[in-house]
Image: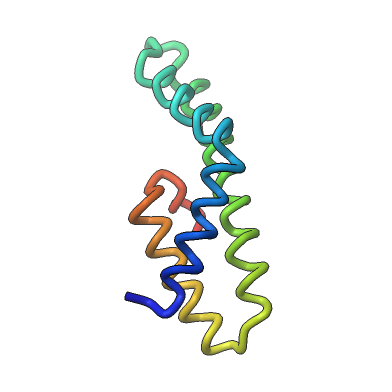
Length: 97
């Protein structure tokens, strides 16, 4: 358990609350891709990836904004812990972290 666990839990909780519509849009876009026929699959997947990228950007901003307030070695620990928790809780959004 990281010394940043409570903080990261709160940050990710705020992220999921503030971005509930984006997360729901990702779910729907993934379902649309899964249902898409061969001719539409590429377009549906690109739409899904655009939404995922938007969420990854928001998570990166949260991580990097807080990280910038820390000493370099502490920041690295925090970033690793944050990325690990995103991978555990929100695995679709680990693509860019």
